[in-house]
Length: 502
Picture: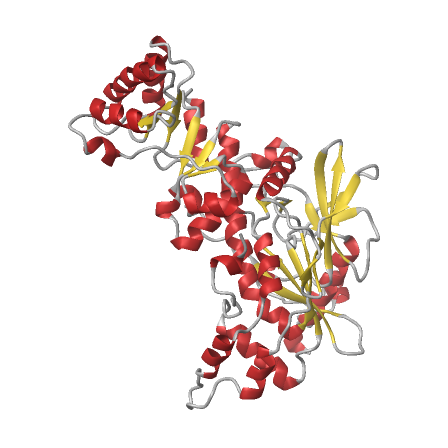
């Protein structure tokens, strides 16, 4: 299901106003057609974890292919005014926007790929004006879905292969938050969703039975369970904690015996409150004693990966996990913090110039160039990622830690490798074949299997080696020194001459 099928055909105004004001500035300054390269990446792995799962990239391709300013968009922009009451955007500029057709190139890591901090998930190359107009929407698509896919992968890892059901629709941040979360959670490994619209749009399996209100609408719990079994004998998972959980399990068993006599079965019971470790043990004992060894126990109630891990350590007898609020809202980290930065620029007839943003916070200093990620694989395990500049190439099979240049790692010469950024869009049109959600989900599972277990640890995970190719690191250092007016030779001699003294 494409964006244009879900929303109005034009989404060109899904942007921040300053993208349009900058576009006008480039247009007036004669810089609109300068060739630019931007990269989209995040600075820290989410949830204090060891990795992320790239997601939302299918939306990027759909958005770019459908990008246009519709007449109603131009009409709205023409109504905006500056502080002096005159139009914010001149008519000639709006006419240019009305006729704009994107012809950018985009490279991207395939959806479901394991990625790490500072690695570009997307590289956008094209006219400066066009690349600028894409920034906000691309961040919107990639930031949220990458966050949720990663959270889902962590939760599924805690469940140790047992089914995880996404139950978050009612707590999600709006309609699109819910739909995007259901899609991304499925990429991350969940088995089904309660969101029926997501089921129809994306082909995700849907699951669900009844709520406490069903039980409360009858004179007693046993009557409620019997009525539900009569209505839906092929979908009986009873919520047993409306009144007394243990008594609820006994009532479910009684109805299960009726179902069995009619050739149906009691699929499961759901625990949604109380001490889940203790109650699941009691429920399992009662079910087994009554001959319902194949009836599973579903656990829910504000679960996340840490709670599931704890319940596993307590030997809880839960076999299916219903996770809602803390998954679809990324409860413990509500934003990924991805950024989109200019790294190279070329004037017509000239050569590319490296571009660098310097910050007092080292993590916010960008990496210049036209970047690519080379991932090295040894004996089936990912062993390190090199970020290199396609303008300068690779000189040494080694990486330099961007946070600490004294930490360097040589990569195994015998290791195989693959370059992660692959063509997605050429001249504004998709060139990569659209993938089914099942294919993306399968890739995510395969990718996670290539990671050392320590990287998937929830607390103090092992740090996967990601670094800059040595020549790229040297170039970046030279550019930082130059920007700050520092002579690196003076620094090495121990007698730096501060810029203000010159």
